[in-house]
Image (cartoon, rainbow, N blue to C red; front, side, top):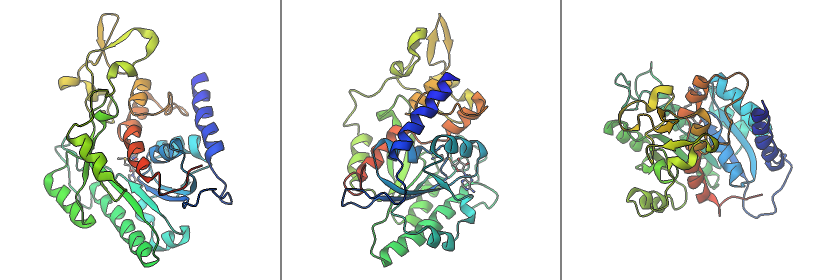
Length: 320
Ligand SMILES: C[S@@+](CC[C@H](N)C(=O)[O-])C[C@H]1O[C@@H](n2cnc3c(N)ncnc32)[C@H](O)[C@@H]1O
């Protein structure tokens, strides 16, 4: 309970000091962020922007998972305005919420990921892959409107790098650009290779440097993310991709990444939070079970990676 409280206090304190009321004006000449986050999950986008010190004027989000919604409400109720299902966001909704200068999101990947042998791809109306088209529809409307009104518009769409080549090519055709590939293993002790279609300034350099391994000597190692007082030792430097299932690290090379008291064992949920760059007990809200917390984190963005990407907007938008 003490941990829960401190987790809330941490986020709330940061939040309360950082969230501007809509009347607050920034001292910077740069514009304030007006964000729309689709498939918002546990609010890693909002959390990262706050950690980076951006001055957020409005932050709209679309999410339908009740556990994810409870979590973001608990931590960020002052800052995030929820809009409901992405499928219900119409052009009228977009006109009503006013100009958006940053759109981001990663649609559900279950029907794209190579680990799902029954995946349906992006065109099956009964799958979740098709939700990509809601991102595209909204992206297209906002981008066209911003161009017409001569306003800057930045965006980022994320999904798994293990998708079939044809799906990558379909998505690239819609966005009229190829994705950048970034693996969280350069920023955290987890392998998590992701595609990012985006127009963030200088993203090419960031992605290129990491892909060809220019930077690497001081990359994070698992041993630095384990609970300190329990004499837990890392058996590997990096774990494989952490998914929504508790059993995700029980196969292949990642098996039993930790030793404790002479036994092989898995990762604590708090260690998984740390690996994703989240504060301790971030997902310990209400009566969420360990399985539910794993589900929410396993779908999430690596905060270290998303911060690295959003940092590219440093000289474009106002900071507090
Ligand atoms: C890959 S996860 C994105 C996680 C997020 N980037 C994060 O860091 O937590 C996809 C999210 O889309 C949400 N989702 C599924 N259907 C949706 C819909 N119709 N409208 C909005 N969100 C939806 C899921 O609940 C899930 O949280």
